[in-house]
Image 1 (tube, helix red, strand yellow):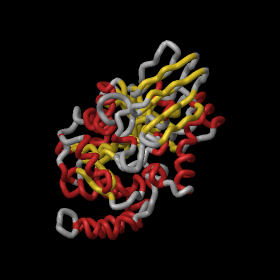
Image 2: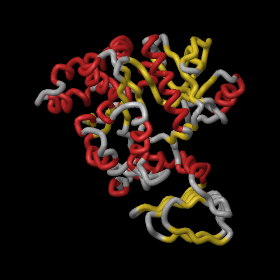
Image 3: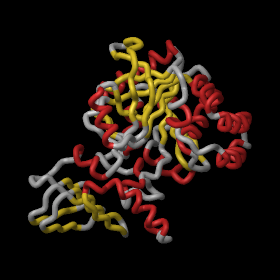
Length: 360
């Protein structure tokens, strides 16, 4: 059997979890759903499939220390540092040329570092079916999630004919991808029944993704070839610092998955959530008798219902409020209605525009 590698993307800023998620300590390093960080939980799960030596983490240079602190079991040389943020196609391409040095016919699993996964045994079995199918068919594979609501913040996969069954899981041909549809379109997808949420978890052979990059993102491929001869040499960092910022800034979904042929999907029968906002947390955290969610700190209330409270250490007191998000962390307090928490990212942009960098 060919070797299998896990590549975990941990370079995002997590701005929708501001003010707790900051540039110096973003979402993936926070303990939002338990005692471990989201990154730590991701590594723990994937360790059921691969040894630490086959687990690699992509992150930005400024997060090097947090990665080592959060997941000390991963060898330091397996932490791949991006000199700049050039989106997911670039970082996956960088990981691919590094892993190709080990075994170009090996299989890469690409996993975000900041998702919630429930029913972990089913998650691992789904990955095993994807790995087995990719080894036989050399296709691009994505894990799909059966939608339970018409969410507009997720990408969608349109499933075509069933290609096969692998380890008990049906494998479907992917007809197309749709990024973040409007509410009407999302509802239609749900009614049609052949659409899945795109989990952002991918499986493919290293040689195959490099071939796809060469075909669909030739500028990126050329830059990767400039770097490749210097890998594992004293010149690697110098060349990477110079060339990597010139990479095109494009996602793997738009740059490759929406253009490539021979893409398959397997439907995961586990619980998946990209935990993209404060309100997404409440379903996984305990609540009091008035449906308030408390995640750290202390809360005292009179006639307050359905609120999400996250406090670093201070007491939060509320009277007669409903469905609010109240987050206190260091020198910032955020207060907003739960239904508007997607606007936190816009608020962070406003903070940037006001030259208040000390609060980012």
